[in-house]
Length: 585
Ligand code: HEC
Ligand code: HEC
View 1 (cartoon, helix red, strand yellow):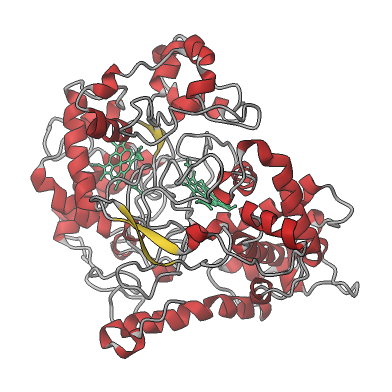
View 2 (cartoon, rainbow, N blue to C red):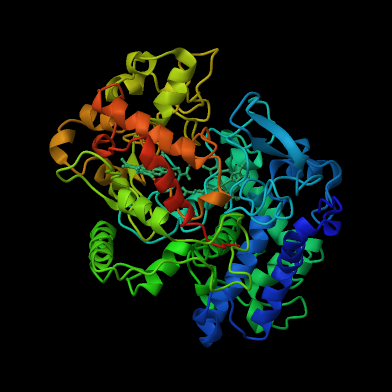
């Protein structure tokens, strides 16, 4: 914990109170679970064995998410020292500092002591939550770091950062048709992402090291003695005990820590694949449990506004998010006409009526309403003041979980290589891509030496570097699992995908739509983390929608050209986005 004498400053008292609450949070949670009380996962936990096992899986999932010994650096330490239960001798130097993006050169700098200094990487290293909450300029996070691109462990490939900005993990597992994850749709299930990450580059493993990684992680899970500091926070059990449901003494693990019976395995008798699979299943339950607006006490001004005005917070059964969003706009407009709308100027869930984790005022007034109408408005007879935002960011999740090109890759590329350069970049068709696969496509377990030039941040020294998003994955035989979902998402109008070449072309520079809830805790924005605040995002939309109407954006989404906003619309839209902030923690 970084102690900078904050307790003495009255301005920081709010943060100090938070600090107490938050650091105790995990213990309080465990105690509440033990006593059978309910907390954020609500009703599910209190009733019946199944719910208890779900809660237990979420607890162990959080521990695994924080486990620092799965990283390749700890594997190297083990080769020297041989003991899974010893503390690593020299932590990963990359973790010494938390890196922050500033939007201006040198863009990304080591800012403050890292929360996992002197340890090796874990999932939380890049998906932060309350680690920096006491530092006013940093604050709470929705499972994202502060970098535009996250620093990775150093290896022989000389890679320094991830290709993309670390995305929020809250709400990403929402059930939907055509389920894909990662911004380029590389994965068709959460389980697959987790296993791939545990054995992948973000924890220091190179593409050819899958088997070593599985064996190493398996060894940690088998040999852990449950006496480490992290284990102590989660009930003090070894992984072998948690996984089998039995203590060393053959006593059962207490009920509140018992995972579902049908999932339990004996780690010594099971294969390493099975052991790692179960750890991923628990992390999976943990991530599934992360949801925005999931409990009354954290609701945003927007949600309270809907509530107070008796408007539905969710779509009806069989109503799509788009239909629901349009219905909300109609309801609001008719209430407004009849002067029946009530505004919000304080938070019913806090003593002082403000946010707990944001500096902004807790309001939903005229300005937010104006922004909301812009946001929800779709093309009609007017071509002014139409946000068309719900085309891709429909309520209540504020994402369609779809794949769209809004020009982010192109703008980063052209900022380096000049206007028009992205349109001139030769992008091969299916057959040509096959021939240039070694150079252009990303490395996989099947092809560990591929260079992936088209899945890299643009760089001055090589004009081939760019990030074409879904194009890397779609119709790529190394990724069979997400192909069906990708096809449905890209080729919703089959006439535009008559040939495979046409379909591939339509995948160029598409990325998954992020949620717009609680953006105050996830800057910088976009898949490349190049936009540092919301005003700049709206400035981006103003420019990008104009460019797409002028046919300057390569493969731009049709819906982008239907965004008709001017400079006067920016402030109301930003105010509306801020009304989607909530006290997620
Ligand atoms: C070095 C930083 C880093 C580490 C460590 C890391 N992640 Fe991530 N994570 C990222 C980045 C960057 C992305 C975005 C990748 C993309 O979309 O191409 C991401 C994406 C994800 C996603 C997909 C989100 C979505 O909406 O598509 C999940 C799930 C996830 N990470 C879970 C984990 C888990 C579980 C671990 C630990 C096993 C972990 N991450 C470790 C940086 C990291
Ligand atoms: C054609 C679909 C589409 C439309 C229309 C659209 N968006 Fe987006 N939005 C996206 C996609 C896709 C991304 C991510 C792009 C990327 O990372 O390359 C995004 C990103 C964002 C982000 C950054 C979020 C983050 O976490 O990085 C904000 C804020 C945003 N959009 C707001 C809006 C607003 C406000 C409107 C209406 C003026 C709008 N969007 C219209 C698809 C759309």
